[in-house]
Amino acid sequence: MTLTDKVCSLFLSQKVAYLIMPSFRAFCLNRNVKKGIDKLAKEKDEYFYLEKVKLDRLEKLYSKEQERRKTIEDKAKVNVTGITLALTLLSSSITFLNGTKTSNIKLEHGVTEDILLLLFLSTFIYLFLGALDAIKALQLGLVYDIYLSDEIKMASKGSYLRCLELSKSIHFNYKYNTIKENFVTSSYDNIKNAIIALLLLVLLGSIMYVINGNNEKIQDKYKMLIANNSLISINISPCIYRNIN
Image 1 (tube, rainbow, N blue to C red):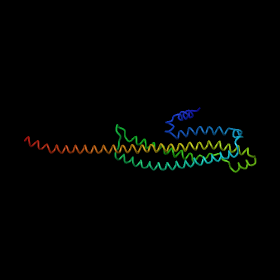
Image 2 (cartoon, rainbow, N blue to C red; image 1 turned 120 degrees about the vertical axis):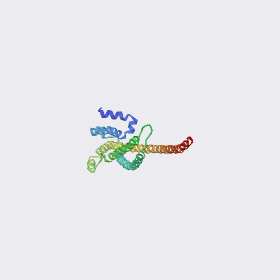
Image 3 (cartoon, rainbow, N blue to C red; image 1 turned 60 degrees about the vertical axis):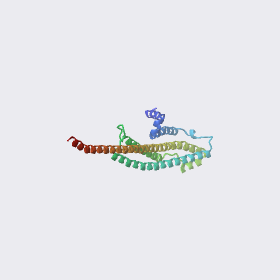
Image 4 (cartoon, helix red, strand yellow; image 1 turned 90 degrees about the vertical axis):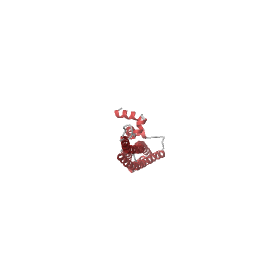
């Protein structure tokens, strides 16, 4: 077992890390799937020939994997649309952050806007990774398909060859579709994490804005109180002076 295999095995056993880093989860899962593909590629034809499975059943399973691939790709496209919407929200948060900077909003106990900046960067990174995973799912062109030339060969050699080729296609396409599905799932989880980070960003920024507004009101009242006391002192002092004289 290589070092990468050990790291992936340890990572997949940790649920918290599993949720926080979806892209690395997809990398580890797909690494295992690719090993399965390499193993299938080394198998002989006898491994794929399923004597007890009828031809019509194999054709249905083959069609099912083709439909599964299309469904996964449609989900990837939806995720890209979701990322576009999330980027719109992110643009709004940038405007909000600019407003907080001009207002000089800070948290208590010496914690500054670094927390907001961290949430903003987390949102951006998750959106970027989500888009990357969705694009990977769409660009993955690996598919074990049956073409016209294959049909001609199978027609001349009977049902045995057709069953064999269909079985190969089902085995390989299942693996390829699983890779696509892992990318799409990772993309979805990255979008979800980005939205959570963005909501926390807006919520925390709003709390800071309210706190800062209250502090400014208290400071204004305190300044007015000091100014009023100063005026009272100025007015009283001459009276005392005249009484002494």
